[in-house]
Image 1 (tube, helix red, strand yellow):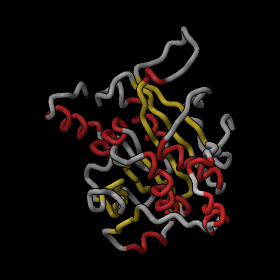
Image 2 (tube, rainbow, N blue to C red):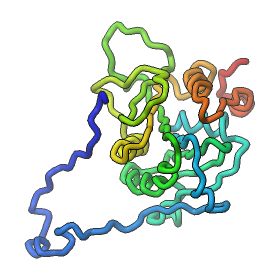
Image 3 (tube, rainbow, N blue to C red):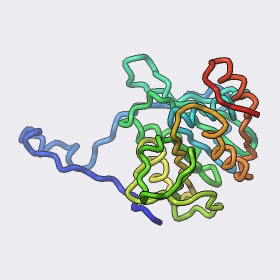
Image 4 (cartoon, helix red, strand yellow):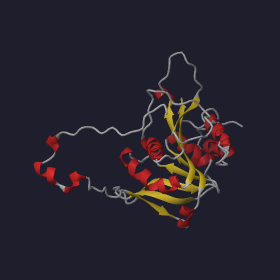
Length: 252
C-alpha cells in the first residue's frame, strides 16, 4: 500500500489528572465507551442476514448531492443512523438505502461531527462485513490537492486509496503523498484494512461545488465501471432538480 494505516495518539500531560486517577479501574483497560449512535431500521432487520456485492459509503457535500439526486432519488431509506447524544434528540447522522439486490448506499450527513466517525463506523460495520467489497466516496476542493507544479489537471478528477485485500480495477490513479483524507471515509478504510476486508476509497477533487456536467463526469464514469453494483447516474433527474434551483449547468 502507498499509505500506512494507524491512529496517532497524542501524549497527554499528567497535569490534567488527579493523583487518585492513577488507581482508577478505567486506567487498566476496562473502560467501555458509552454508545453515542445507533441504527434505527425502518424495514425488516433480516436484511442483515443477506450478502451484498458492495456497500457504498458517501461523504462530502458535493458527493452527497450527486448521489442524493442522481442515484437514490427514487429509493426510500431502510435505516437511519442517529446521534443519541446530540442536543437535538436523535439527530440524523446518515441514511442507508437499499438500491438493488447487489448494492447498499449509505449517505453521511454534512453535520456529522468528526469526533463521531468511530461510533458511526462501528454501527455500520456489520453491513460492511456482509459485503464483498466496501466503496467509500468523498469530495474535496481541487485547491486542497497537492501535486507537482506544471501538471495539468481536469476540472474534476478522482484519486483512490485501497486496502491490501482489494482486487478491483484501478479506475484512477492512487492518491499521492502528502495528501490526506479524514472523517468517515478514512475511518471506514482503516477498519477494513484492520479486518482484512476488500475496500477502496475514491476522492473526487473538483474546482467547483456546483453539480454540472463537468464536475459529475468522473463520478458517472466510476459508476459505469462498477459492474458489481449495477448503478448508474441519473443525469436527467440531476438536470431537472438543479435547473429548478437555478444553479445547474448540466446539459444533455
